[in-house]
Image (tube, rainbow, N blue to C red; front, side, top):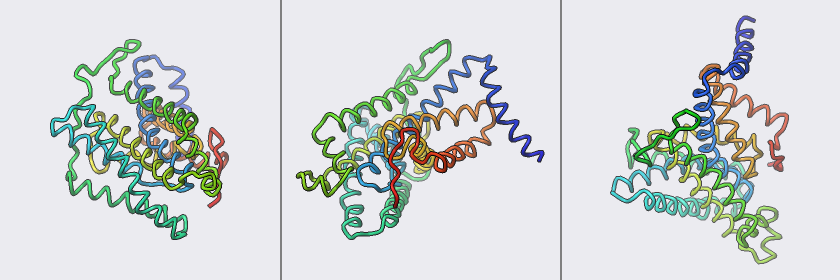
Length: 314
């Protein structure tokens, strides 16, 4: 009983602490930190939702693709390639890796009428293979990723914030807007949405369903790579980088509405803010409990998420 009282007291402390914030600098830092964390999760959540929307399958390679893309960019920078060129090369390579994963693994299993669980397990196996490949290629030590800006600090309302944090937030929202335009205003995007609604009907209309799904996997991999490069200067690059971000990105996609690109970003940002606020005003010991507790509550009471995504029965 004493433990229960202490636990409820911690929740009370969370809200009373927020309401009685005297240190505005700390509040701004917590909000910016939550947004950066949430936008990083969001780049992965976008990939989860895109692939699920296009194919109906869950894909557990997203976080590993983020890690692998970060390592590629780090390698290119170490070779003396300018940052923009290194970013472009890494994103393009990861796009083709994502496309090849779908073409030579996922599609083969789907064509063989494999059960959905086998397809999901295949993505999990690919994730483990890539993680171990990264450890063999770049070893298990964390690697320092160079800062993106020489003068990396700016002032917001008297609080020092890194330019990389602002860039990460801006890029995540730009990615969502570009995806919105691509899916709704371009012929190929319309084909992707049609294939997601009904593969059979899309095929009858002359849409190359295999191509649209392959490109979707490629876009998801490119988004993961971009998110990894943006967060890498804040976190060290290591073969475990993806594992640190994977589960909470998935939680963000669930809370926002699994399969909805807007929900992916919104849900991920809510997870990021919840994590930083709990860590700052309660205790970091409660972060995991509260974040995943909220996810489970959404799955029980509102499985369609904030944006009312369609819940598929498998």
